[in-house]
Length: 208
Image (tube, rainbow, N blue to C red):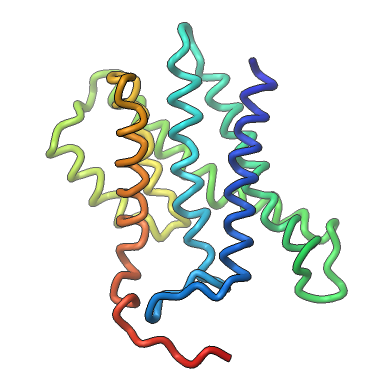
């Protein structure tokens, strides 16, 4: 079970990495909002917190104390998302001096920025709900959205609040996991992009 959980986290993280690299080297743009270049950072900022949902909803649904497995899933996700720098060095090196060895610091930093903070926020929210300290109500959901929006610019860290709440809700209502997951994804896209919405209505410059 432990090896499967780590592998699952890694594969999900690797998908996030591939989507990030694809966006970074694309020419996707809507008005002044661009997904390429540095704009691609929004991809792991949203997808890394979201990736916590399917993994934790699956692991924690099993009987017994599954906190270790939940943590190992995060470890796998950390390595998978960190692969962004490795894959970039292999496929799209910035210069001839870039090597896989020189990409290792980026490998460690990427996961640390996009995965660990979101996981901490998610775990805290999940604990608050499952321990009975906080109930999921329209008021607490609205408060969570506000806090998540205010902290989303921290590499998506605050979006972990929404992911943790969604996991708690999925554990309470397992028959609605898919619906909850879809709603979470839509919410993360909106909240994560909230600071950039004005850019959608800004005319883009000429494409070089």
